[in-house]
Image (cartoon, rainbow, N blue to C red):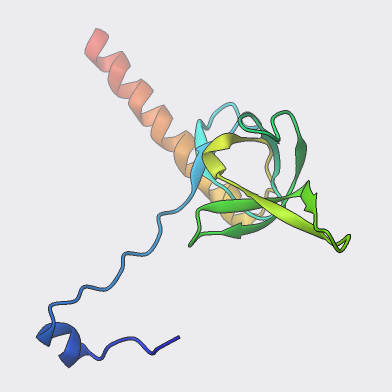
Length: 127
């Protein structure tokens, strides 16, 4: 693999840097106050589309460059007998249980506060 081009060469050959992949926001059935939330390791999910439909498990890794997540019990056997995780696109899963930590708690509070403000504004418009 070669090194990335220097700033001068990028300008000379008019090459742009690739965009970083977006945060993987996907459906969440666990927290009713939130429709979608960034998916993370240790969230529990249910696969809703594809050959692995109906399987549940914990997320073992989030591969942002390839837009896939690896789920605990979604694996295939290699001919050598070794099991390899199958990558599942995050839009094909629904979060069933969130791993709550400080950052997630803040995200949920921020979303909740925004919804309350919207409700207040809608209430003023109706009066």
